[in-house]
Length: 120
Image (cartoon, rainbow, N blue to C red):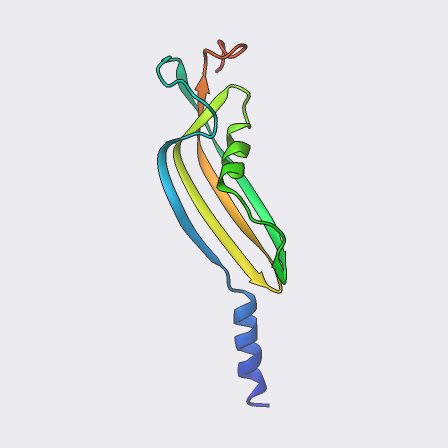
């Protein structure tokens, strides 16, 4: 009985472990073609984009930082990039789990795009 309790505690600790870390910090990031010389940019709200794949014994795909960035940028049709960007990765697995990239940043709005002239 004395040996079972430490084994249960160690097993529980292993089941509850995961790993998260900062991958990168960027001043400006975009996955779109952007003309930075037009001077019609404004900063928008802070947004988050994620790309996550599940793990069932083995990963069922590979998450992409580009996909997470695209997801964040596409939250607004006038956005062409992100400013003050952080990229994080997160991992958890014990038979079942997930692998995830998260991108967070302020939208970079291009007011010269069609239909975006009055963006607020």
